[in-house]
Image 1 (cartoon, one colour):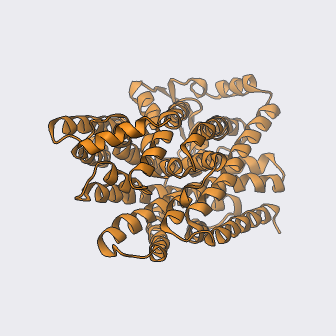
Image 2 (tube, one colour):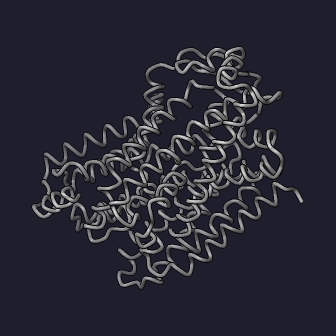
Image 3 (cartoon, rainbow, N blue to C red):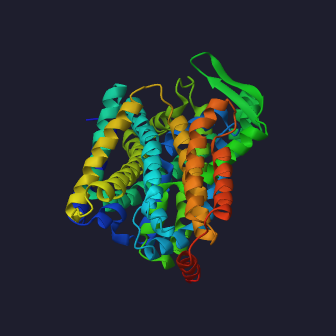
Length: 499
């Protein structure tokens, strides 16, 4: 049997076993959604990174670097993401962990908003849950597309068969173990992703003769490939191979850097902050995540993409296949199998988180709130599991088009969450005058802006106007309308005073 296939099978068996073990540890909805707030710093750090990066780290980002070198998207996205992630860990993680526990032990983002702003109308909760479901459908679809491309490029499978197989695998252990299964598998997957990109980039650089030789060869192909301020056009299907497309411009750079703003509103990443067993462990988790789970994978992905340009004699028709094809050329089948399992790890680690957050929105924020207020914990866990199946089926339908781009789908969903929830999270944690009406206005305007902005035809990433307009709305509606109650102010002062 093919060594690469054997490696895949072994890896998948390990993931399913973890799902079965954690199934026996999952008894309440809090266990299923947040793992009972029991994650240690190592699991939290790698789980947050793994659920963050997903398939686009090993497929989308190397593909962008392969198509454009340092210019256009790749380098500026990496810089923006690095800055955003560090700020998120430094300022948001600890305070969110404390606040969600103070606010009646909130276990979902919509529940946190409702409790934080004393929203007895439940409007905040419904709006938040609706946006989570809407944007996660696109985000989950991006992961399923990445999985299909992996199986397609590795085993020459039909795209639709590959899509179906990947979806079944991911749903299986998310269905069983919930947050604990997701978090512990993410720990393994995050470490595997970092190792794959680290070793592949170092090995490739040694083989080619170092950075200087890499940039020399790239410059000989097209100077724009090594110019962070120049765009490069690549379309192998139409015979356009690495042609200079002029300067990127301020709009392009701002749009790429704006990816960093997205961190503040990603429910699947924020859930890790909420689940760490103590706010005192955040500092250690931050150090682990930033050093081992952020810097190495991001810049390793850029190097891998650029190595692909000078490695392949025949340019790739699909630039997003560069990592998949590169490891099969460079390594023997056994090592290639391990590294390609890292791609599957990246995909699984985010899709499972997205399915879980979406299912929690349905079970906790819709089902218990409006249909079965007295539902037992066991019933809610099973509602969550069934929700995983329903959401996965819809995501498969979105991903069914085999021309779908991983990076395009991620870009849209990332902007959606960043603009919808990012400002609301930041203001709720750092501005004591934030009101319920301000939060409602900010969430609505941020989400709607992301939906409508593409209709303007502007090249500016929808994250930018969405985030800015949402922030303005929060401030205006908080100052003009009814302000926060004394109870909310007192709670804010108490939370912010915790050491």
